[in-house]
Length: 247
Image (cartoon, rainbow, N blue to C red; front, side, top):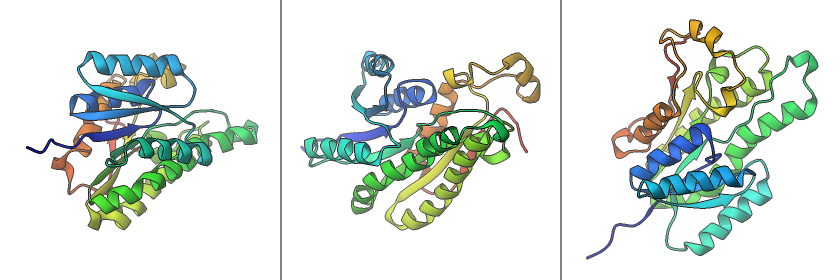
């Protein structure tokens, strides 16, 4: 009797926050998780141990998504170790914030934020896309942001990065739909993570109809649906999860 092939899901920036929650959730859906991280080894190892504690399976894969050479080398090394398998689910979650008013924003802060979100999306997705198209099945979910839809003062770089990723999502979805590869974006609002720890939650809650910040696990549930077989006819969409904030 033939065994079911292992299903692999790569989550970038999976050591903390939303990425970690997505990794944990997908591990309970039968995926072997490839935990990508750039530098925080201790946090990545914690994600790994938590997945194993849930009865799941995972491995670490360290590389900086903004570095094209490092990304390609890491993914080629993984492929050489798994010649009969492929990564069928990709969650482009890696992102950084370096907020400042544009008048005072250092050029490197503009470049760094766009490089992680936009260049990172390109580097990782292009490297994995061929296998998805050949196998005629794949799921790509890009984690964007309310900031990329609405625009937020002090976040011209982050809004540009996430807004660009929204547009790229819609374009790529049309390129690959016939091969049963879907491409969608999830746009969280204010979610309780390290990335939002510096924000004034008490003040911002008054702007949110739901009256609270979201939980990373809630974003993870949405991502799990989008990568499922049940979501096969959903592609090119940007789905907000923000407690009711609309522009």
